[in-house]
Amino acid sequence: MSIGYACQVIGVPGTETSRCILKNASEDNLRSLIYHNLNALDAMLHYNIDNNIHFFRLSSDIIPFGSHPANQLIWWEEFEEMFMALGEKIKNNNIRVSMHPGQYTVLNSPDPSTIANAILDLEYHDRFLNALGMDQTSKMVLHIGGVYGDKKEASRRFVENFPLLSDSIRSRLILENDDKSYTVEDVLNIAYQTGSPVVFDNLHNAIKPSETNCTEQEWMLECKKTWKEVDGKQKIHYSQQGKNSPVGGHSETVFLKPFEDFYPLVPPETDIMLEVKDKNLSANKCINTVCINAKAVELEKEWARYKYYVLSRSARIYTEVRQLLKDKKEPVAREFYTMVEKAMLLPEDMGAEVNAAEHVWGYISKESTNAEKNRYQKLITGYKEKNSSISSIKRHLFTCAVKRNLEYLMNSYYFYI
DNA sequence: TGACGTCAAGATCCG
DNA sequence: CGGATCTTGACGTCA
Image (cartoon, rainbow, N blue to C red; front, side):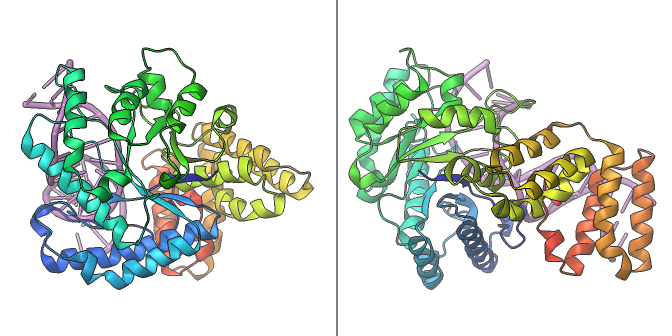
């Protein structure tokens, strides 16, 4: 059972990908963006290895305009060595990678040019995984597409178009239920005909349930039957409805309580992809709690990154967490993350924010320039008088930390959530 | 015709 | 001029 997250690493400098707009997509620019993004991917893998994360979705944006005529580079040859090295890193560290073409890749459209573009996009993703040397267990997730007023006919068209895809693509494709049109039951019926494995998405299933009334556990077991030996472990998507988001919007973090209620329902030997705004933070939280039941000493690394954030929400919770880790009464992972969640749910408190900012400033103040000091004081005053936001203070502090390469600060979640 | 989702790039504004 | 904030992009479907 691996727990993973999608595309981005929060809070680790060097993992950011870059892009460009169409009019700037010159050969040279694309080349340097790809080079930059492959290095970013290397940093992401390094982070995952360091944090015991063995399941990861690769961003489709690593090759800008990867399936667009604007990009004519033979990138898989030009960057072959980098791809090989990345692939070795993935394999040697037992990481499972997957990709997820976006909502605009529609294989069942009535418009032939849309289908042609969808095929090009699937070819791009497949080529990317092949360049890394990934086998058939590295999957590409796809939704069924539009309904066009007739779901039966649209489903039939999906099945009809499926053989247009290459062997490699067909062996990688897995199909997911969505929250608008195709229920897990609809997807299973299509997948029986294409021979594709099915990804169960719990939030989509909750928003758009199947006509047949089955529990989440029953649907996951139905999906499990579509996974063959060569496909590797069954995959599911897990997310929670965001409190202030539109229906289907993902939560800021994966709250432990509902996740731990769900987890026992998941069939054994299943990989769980978390879809959540705080990405790797939630992956670490869930892995440390349900997979390895991390000890206090192992949570120190997490605490180092969370501490100023927690302090900025509540000095009281900050003290509680310190006490918890000091007492070392095992197990503490659940208590630790529950306290962090409690801090996240608090409304912004000006006193707590200023207090935390002062603590962080303490790292910088002694060797700061007058300009930095003045700016800091001005921002604090502005914040207290409600003329500016806490984020402008954080931005300034972060810039100062980066200038001095203060890694301990730069890695703090305080700046990212 | 605009919302949907994504999030950095690009554009513009501000002091 | 640097930094902050707002808008755009690139895709297809659907109301």
